[in-house]
Length: 130
Image 1 (cartoon, one colour):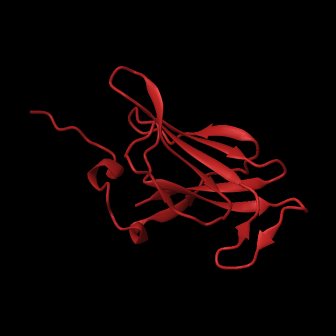
Image 2 (cartoon, rainbow, N blue to C red):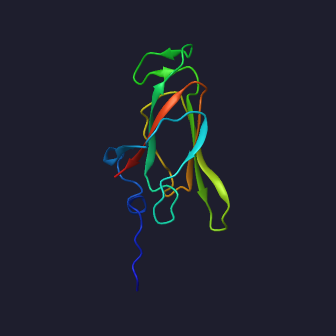
Image 3 (tube, rainbow, N blue to C red):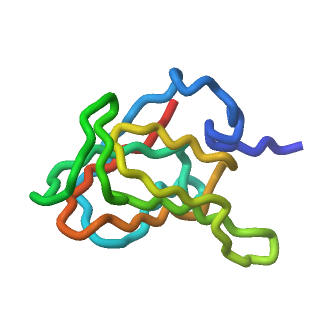
């Protein structure tokens, strides 16, 4: 029987978060868009995503603490999957007003990751890999 090679994320879907390594997604991001990390027909071969704010416009309030908490939604992340009938759907979405969070996907192998960033904010994204 032939073997099928699967990405690491399907083999270890519930590894401790401390096993993750941030890997830069080249570029800076604004507005709305879609991220993929193709491998063997899979849309995103990663365990999760993280981000840092590269630019924050004046006037966005913040509460000092760990982590710094901004008074506006800075980025929204939506995780898209596809069922066996080729229907696309969002399996989860989150609004964030902090940076440096490790968002581990609740279901492995998403089709794509969608983002919406607040006006004037510039973000650097990272894949969370093993």
